[in-house]
Image 1: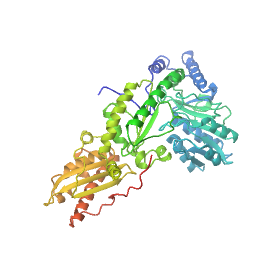
Image 2: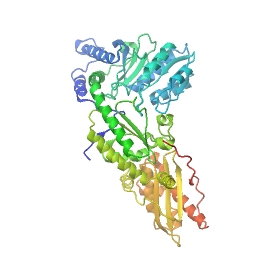
Image 3: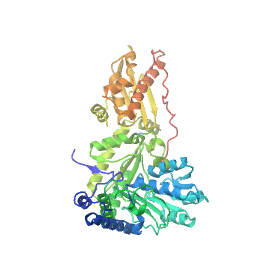
Image 4: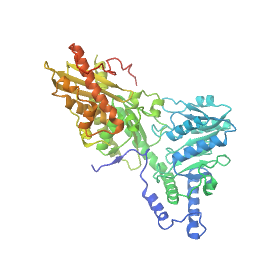
Length: 394
Length: 147
């Protein structure tokens, strides 16, 4: 098996060669600690400042509003826990959605054990937060709204600007987990009234173990990691210089290539969606048909269990993922698929394929042709399908 | 994560299918949890399992355990078939990951459910066999979803 078709770019991406090249000297020659006085090391301070600017520019933010972290989960944890603590005197209520990443959901559950109250908003069948529900959930004690920019499983993009406006009108802080969206769709923190934004390097062809939290000037959140004076005393720890350089380079690359890349990905995404919808019976596209990430395809196939599908695809060199319980190690399928109203047995049969710029039409054809056969084969072994066909015949 | 034997039975499952007018049929599991197994038995007048087929909705381990279970009971008499436990199925597959042990339990339950069906139809008692807990009868799965 020599062919490898990597369709799991929402899980992680290949580090771009130019990103690796940019990082390497910071492991070898320029290994110095940016906090040191001697010029050899102190030059790294400027290197970091430059990356901060690149990232700020990509968001319409100021450089001193970007704080480097170890990744998306840390950024989410920091934004939620530190906001809750800093604004506890004002109120104890947080609003989020049922389809957030676990880095948000589990942090909210933790905060509930610490006396905070959390509203988990429902979403519609496309996975969109309902603005009327959001407005209705606001209380005098609401201190934070945290809604993801785009969903990692079904790709649905939220009405972020409208949510930001609602938050602003009510004087409530607005955080968004943009781990999936950043680098794939243009983001403007001012236009969308975003007060905090989490992002991660390895989702946009950058390295793993690096991310950032954007914190708007004036937001009073405290340090999450105590120690040295790095990151304006808000996040201690010797800077991950190679990681920061890698992240900056990846962001620069993502911004530069965004238009061309996403046009191509959208076209292939829609082609894949069209072929599956037309050629595989009893399937359903999960997520919003148009307001979705340019690289995300997510289908449920009835009478099919996800893990079986993934293993068969893997044997053909195709890497994808599923929201089936069997792939998560729990008994329940994905909380996102349940939140959009899928019954358990249909949620078990989900398949997520997330594209990158290297995927070709030929790859998509190879995947679809094989997927058709795999779904048919699995169905031929399924007692659910057997019963269904017997019922249809009656 | 799976052994070679599991992968072999997953890729080339033995005895997939249905048996018309089977001597006993058992369906166990729960679509909600993502596994349903159905086992068909063809048992002759000497209580020997002449043939055994299965259909399974489930993960790789569920399919491999169904396949192995059918192999193990084929040609055995019904008392011997009672000895095909989940442990026996697991051992025959060179083991399963801990999170997949329940799949082998399901295979054992599916055989028991099919044997129970056979015993009921023929009004006999099989020693050690109890009414299956989660046998699914037709029409119990609830209304079909439309989309």
